[in-house]
Length: 114
Length: 114
Image (cartoon, rainbow over all chains, first blue to last red; front, side, top):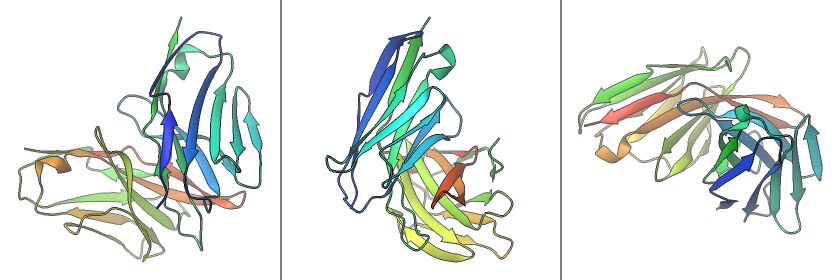
């Protein structure tokens, strides 16, 4: 089955700097890659996603890139702000006839230092 | 607020007992997913229902079962509870967008088994 590895497990950056979180997946059939942000005690919140037919997607300060050949995808956050501090999870899934089994990475705890 | 509701918020019970967790999807969403989040296992997909039928299955224990009712709400039943079942249980529902199903999580039920 699918396996998703996420690095780093913790990341600390200065406010205003950029943060990058990387994930690799094992199943070449995976075609959907969402990123979730989870604040302490709260629900995972979808922040951006990308499908396998797209190499890059951007939404304001957040961007995701996908390299299908290398089976890795990354989350980029620019101009970081204190409210970006949270745990970020990547996930991968192969959608087939409406069946979607998201396999999550282990998470990255991002801390933005003022 | 994602529009997905879960009850109860917290549940404390003893080993060997049985509990039922309830989820109502966002209006119009036909799919419901269940996830378990624990410190050592991360976010694990359990099962997906689509319009009342099981659509995908993850690492769900035989002691656990789920169903989706005609009004689309879902229940996750956990029986013969063990200490290791203590975790956050999330429900998500999905909307079809941009060629895939985007999952939105509910607030979760925190289960403590003593």
